[in-house]
Structure formats: C-alpha cells, structure tokens
Image (cartoon, one colour):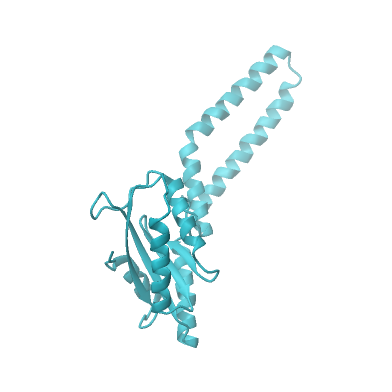
Length: 213
C-alpha cells in the first residue's frame, strides 16, 4: 500500500467523523428514543467498519514504519537505511581510506538444518536484537536485511576488530536465554569495504555470501 492510499484512508476517516458530528447535532433535537437509535446504529456501523479494515490498517502501519526506516518486528533499521549507510561508508573509505566492515549474521533454528528461523514470537526476536545492540558502540549500526539475515555495519573497524566483536556477540547470544525463541544456530561472515566497487555489489555479497558457523 503506497503513501497516497494511506492518505486517502485518513481522509475518509475524517469525512466519516465529520458526518458523524453533523448527525449528532441533528439528533440532539429528537426525542430520547429516536436519539438513542440514531446514535447507536452509526456507532455499530463504525465499529464493524474498523474491525473489517483491521488488516488494512496493520498493512498501512507496516508500510509507514518501513518508509521511516525501521523494521516493525525487531526495531532494527531496515534495508532502505542499510543502502544509505553503505553509500556513506563507501564514500568515506574512498575519500579518506576509512576502514569499514560489515558482519553478516544468518540466524537459523538449530533443530532444522538449513531452515530459516521461524518467527513465531516477534517479542523474542526483538529481545535478541536488543541484546546485540547493547554490545555495539554508538558508531555501529544493526540492520535487518531479510527475515533471518542481519548486518552489523562497523565504522573505523578493520577485520581484527570485527572478529573481536563477532566473538563477543556470539558469546552473549549463546549465554542469554530468550524463552520466546528456539535454540539458535548463527552462521556469519565478515565483508570489509576493501575492494568494494559499488553499494549494489556490496549488498549482493551480503545477500548471497555463504556464511560459516
């Protein structure tokens, strides 16, 4: 659903609310029994309409959050923000030689070989990402690339520093119990900025790179 559809839905809501206020102003001059009937019926219709459009509202909310740069389920920054951050990081490297590394985590259920992590509990995944963020510096950023693939973008960090953070993240993950999630298996890879020619190529590596456990 695009932004124009969201705006249209909001405009319709304002129109319905305005008509309801006009109806109330008219009904105020009616006898009590007629007033109750005239007020109750439109209210029930509005409740039914809200219930029927609940899924549409949730889809609109997801779209708004996506446009704002956040992932609804985890609170991480999304792929749109990742592209922007990679563009800035690549420009820094080309101009000043700034070291940048991207750690890619592929999260899977340990009970299902080669299966993507089922996401039965958004709360558990949000806690996991919150744990990861707590281990990062203020200059580091965490993005959700796909359902089960996450990217840590580390500025002014070489491969040695990225490896050190990797060990800390893995240790924290395996020693912190999150009841809403199954036992996890995390495969990973480190993709430094050196040799990267474009953001599209860097993103393609993140999407296709075979991570190791």
